[in-house]
Every structure is written in structure tokens, then in C-alpha cells.
Length: 79
Image (cartoon, rainbow, N blue to C red; front, side, top):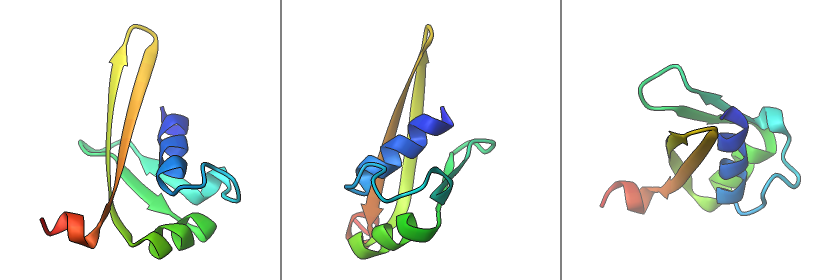
């Protein structure tokens, strides 16, 4: 599932994973709400887009996992 989160974050950044290394996107799934931390080029790209918060959710069904990631900017957080 971690790879699914990383891929979804890359897509939310608008570049997929082009120019971003896997290790620049970190996910912590040990908490009730998953946490996303960015480093390097991924962090720079998020800052340039004004992304300040990540919402992550996932669903399991049989042998499949669906990951959904939302990137929120300041205006969206304050609404």
C-alpha cells in the first residue's frame, strides 16, 4: 500500500514520479490517519503548488487496495 500512496502523491504533484525519487515521499501508516512527508524535489514541487496538507484514505477489497490522496492548499483548508 505504501507504493500506492507514493504513486498517488506523485500524481497529485502533477508530475507522476518523473524527477522525483521514491525515497522523497514517505508515508507513515501506523497512525489512525496516514501521514505524508516530502523531501527534496517532491517537497519543492508541493511548495510551488501551495500544497500544505495531504489527506489519505484507502480501501481493501479481496486482494486489491485502492488508495485515494487529496492535496490541499491553504484556501481549501480554510473553507
